[in-house]
Length: 293
Image (cartoon, rainbow, N blue to C red; front, side, top):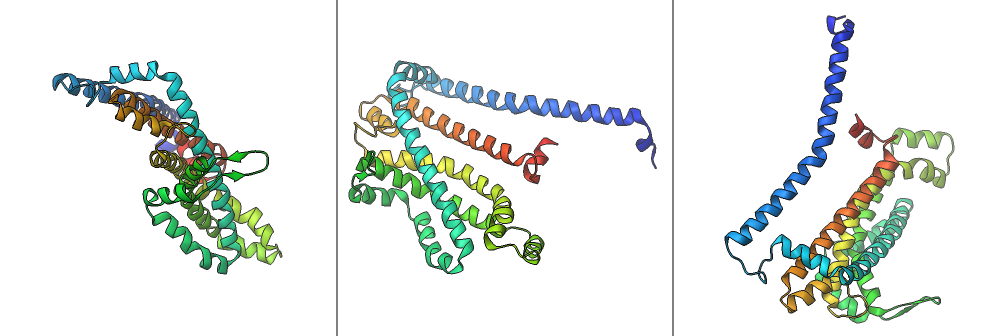
């Protein structure tokens, strides 16, 4: 037994040092990103002023802020449309990805038959597929309401982009259950669905949540790409359409304002999904427990 193990003053000193380090890291996690953002805004402003760049080529952050405030109502309406498309596409990707992952896990033949098509959807550039989708889709009558063809087309495009990460991560997670626990379930005569419910789904949850964080950003990208391809006003005029409209009218400050809203929306989606992942995993999974030490 060493002196370090027996001397309580040394133990208290180590604990105080750890607490101090945790406090510094917690403060730095907020201060450092804020400082970098402020520095980037300053450099942006200085570049525009020092080089006398015209505002229709590169507006300064002040002009972008003014455009954001002056067009807040219009941009908010467009933001609502974009976030609706993103959310619906993400929900559809979760339903389709998880459902197919469970099917692939239960049937090897189904995986061999359909997984190549999922890969093809992933590797095919969505910009090339989107115009065809918008041409061929028609209004979808669900009885209680009708989804217009352009809205449905944008949903399909965004779904294609967000679908594969959830499918691949969920499939990998369902296969990652401990083989010793699998043997234990077999010894006790567990059915296939009991093994799926009590062993494989909990084991797959961290993988699924990792894929969900990726798919959240990709669904926003897919929604924006679909809006660019649709390229018309009226119903479905999201933030991407506002960028196109602003560029046509040489209102570059408004285009930057819409672009900043898209970026902030992506950050918000990632933050919400990260919080969901932490809430579901922090009490039991090692990847989340370690971050609290």
